[in-house]
Image 1 (cartoon, helix red, strand yellow):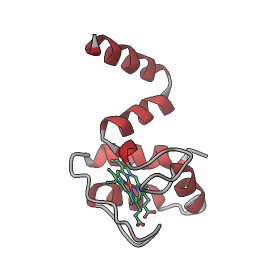
Image 2: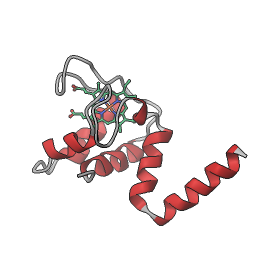
Image 3: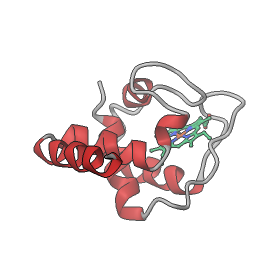
Image 4: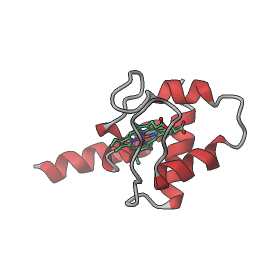
Amino acid sequence: MKNALLFLSLSAGLAAPAMADLQLAQSKNCMACHAVDKKVIGPSFKDVAAKYKDDKGAVDMLAGKIVKGGSGVWGPVPMPANTQVSEADAKKLAAWVLQTK
Ligand code: HEC
């Protein structure tokens, strides 16, 4: 039953790229600390998108932070490294975060 649901949500995700990336973020556990439009432990992804909207290097910079972790930008709580995320997935996630306006 769980597998059937997963399959359904994955195929729905293929039809809608933004949804697919939300599911990637969920599967990589990002949504345990982040939400798209409200602060949880980390900043909301909309706030991140707004902060870097004029920064052309933001995808690469954020992809690096997603894998290695980061601190001191949003508050006292650091983001731990997410070593389960490949570089390619980190870039996908960074690009997705930056378009969540
Ligand atoms: C254990 C909680 C936690 C998890 C899991 C987590 N984050 Fe974070 N994230 C944070 C915190 C806290 C910050 C703020 C760090 C700071 O102030 O520099 C942050 C910051 C960020 C930023 C902004 C970095 C910056 O320098 O502006 C992005 C983008 C981000 N996270 C994406 C992700 C993605 C994508 C994932 C999943 C692979 C993820 N996070 C998983 C807690 C988390």
